[in-house]
Length: 586
Image (cartoon, rainbow, N blue to C red):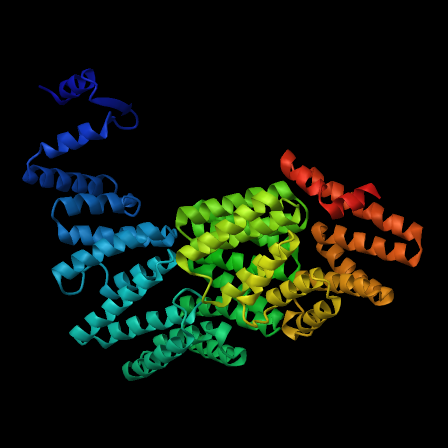
């Protein structure tokens, strides 16, 4: 009986169905159980032969698509019992998934490759144990599985000791130092510094100057808990070595991460120069995921500076690039930045859409830190439009749950930011006790976000003098002067506090400073509140014409925001806010 006749019989008995006839004939089993039964009916040797034949045919027919088919080829050669070919393609499938930030898939492929490599012994012919271990660990980190990543690096180090392989030992110590030096649940700055020092000794003994460049970069990464000037010095050492040795990739990594240190030292021009050079290097190297990441870092800094137009332009480029290569991490990051610009400008529908897409992308990639960050932004946005009683509260609970799952923001620099933002939201929706509890957990931290939250809470508790004291701390920081958005909020809070004290002249100066900054930003959510406060100020002065003019301007901004909230319940919530009602009814 011919193959065609066999297929006809199976189709007549409703066991298979035609999937397509062009460009190639393809059938599918109608039920997975039928497929499983057919597969199990084959003898083990027959199955192996079929899997090997399929793998070989795919290699021969599609030589240009081996990366695309790597996972399929790995499966067939593994089932065929061909460990060498399976190892080759599991490693390749891991590399493909890793480049796309499909980190859960990458980790699975690398783990299978290592399992085979350990069974075979020796160094794999098509890759290296160092590559497999380091990329498996890094994929696990990106998937927020830091304990497993550290276990991977520890196993790598044990193998290095067993084999007397100093280079492999150095690579393992380097990765452990990097994990402990960056904000994550395993953040341990002392351990990070100790491991980095040990790595420097090993690198010196081996004469590995490329590793030295990487080590100084890792030490620089410890900046949230170390001296910024010292961190910058290590960054400069890394740059010098990378330039001397023409280590283009390391140069790009160091430049990109150095911008944070420079920014926090108030060296904004140098920070931008570092990012610009890094972007050029990533383009030259053809590393599209890191180029997208660098575009997002640039957008994030521009947003903090208050250059919303350029921030949105860079985020849009990152979004388009991330979408084209299927990079969910940077897609999530770009949508998150874009959503903040839309929110500040009162384009609420676009803000909500971008936030939801950011959350969905982070969930697809298993990136819970980004997921928690965007959920927090979503909660803050609901709070801004008065959707406090249900939606914002639910989102707050989701943020706590997301952070609690991975404990990612509660032992690190980012914990401060998360709790400060939660406190701000609680103040804005009237839950002062909950805000006090969030700030209590900060235990004296004085980041700009926590100082702003403390000022908001203190003012809401009826203590304008205390609020001004916190604002004085925030506004006296030289390194914060580039954060136009933060200062617009700070001047607004100062104006409200001075107004509460009855100091109308000082309040007017502060509110006008906030007004100029907010108009420059075109930040409508800040703007209408400032105009409303100025209207109140002019009423107290006894100037009804000036008060009416400010109210009219505030009304225009409020109506703009309302027009850009399409959900009827959310629009009604915004228009029902006491401050909004006061603006519209006056």
